[in-house]
Image (cartoon, rainbow, N blue to C red; front, side, top):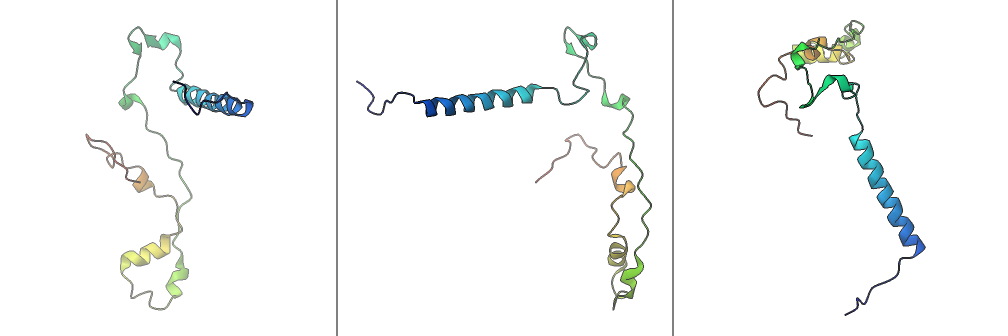
Length: 121
């Protein structure tokens, strides 16, 4: 029994098929390429069991680039009823232009835990 919708491959169909397969091959090739210098290991560092991974505790913590000190913006003090606001809101309005918060960034135990970090996006 023959298939009723059987068509021969036209040049346009064949070109689309080849382009699709080429993109899939390139995607797989890029996914398998090493992305960081840490993944690019020399053959001397690999053992017969596989590459050796040094524990993360041996690595020095990454240095944070200190930013300029953030100075309070006093222009909000002239706003009507600024003194009536809670202290935390006043602090937020004075320092909301700051972008560098080293106390928040340099907290080694903020992501500690056996389960790791779960980010819900």
